[in-house]
Image (cartoon, rainbow, N blue to C red; front, top):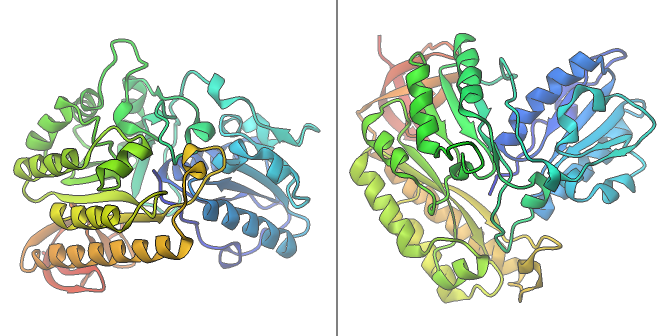
Length: 432
């Protein structure tokens, strides 16, 4: 499950002039953010100018609506700019974008990764069958626009079919990047000055099942950290509670460069709802996992993806999810009001009223905010190591946002003493 979030608006980023390089507008997850960097470089290689590439998300109906809205606004603001639409929404619903006269070219998720497909050839819709894709190549990216942490894709697609999720139809089946290619990519980024790398994918914990020898994610992480000793910080994206392998647990215990922050794809805290979602874990599995993680790494923070108002969720089922957030001390929440996606089994189930979904989502967020506040308050007086991201802010190892009360250079890791908590952030002073 991924978090839909747009980059700054086109108006904020300025207008494209004649002969100007192509711009990228990204919606959605970290994998999309990574692929947008590949698109940016491919556009330069192809000599594409006076164009905007919209990399869409399909996690929710709202994400698709925002993309269509941006396309229409862009056409009004820039009538002569070429508009290329790609990403998961374009892969799943190319016909809907083809109906929009504002769109010049539609590319599927596999098709978008080639520089040649960005150039016009008379074919307006180029969306190949994503289920026929059998391999995922490493994306050789040497840097990220305005970012101090780097994303590295290790996996794409998903073999599971949760009843609410449309993403497998946008990304295809699970396929992994070979370990050697991941190591090479990380080494390149570290040599370029990046201090933190985030391993990303659609179903990261399924890594390796399609590779020779079926190496698990833990094996990849251990090899990566051994092969690139200069890497200061390694972070993992959303993990499936049903797939944490023994190698990951061992690393969590003995490898300080693996950040003490687990973000879990939980989705619900009620067993009946989890079964109707076709998840592979139960509530007790999440509780045990968090208890084990905190016993292994006491300073660890926990985040989770949660869906509010899944079909048939009654007050008691929602109460179980709310109680799970509090019981497990989940401080970093990504909460989604349920969004019915056409073609999924959940869209055919009895729906919870939209108003109730939104109210429950807000209650979950409020609970998460309270837990985050307590988590941050426990850091007062402590020294934290902060990756400086710019504008005097950064992230601590446990993913807490930090405002630095003092000078620090973006891209560096500094030790800082926590003096206060303000607006969901630590306020800390860098140590000399």
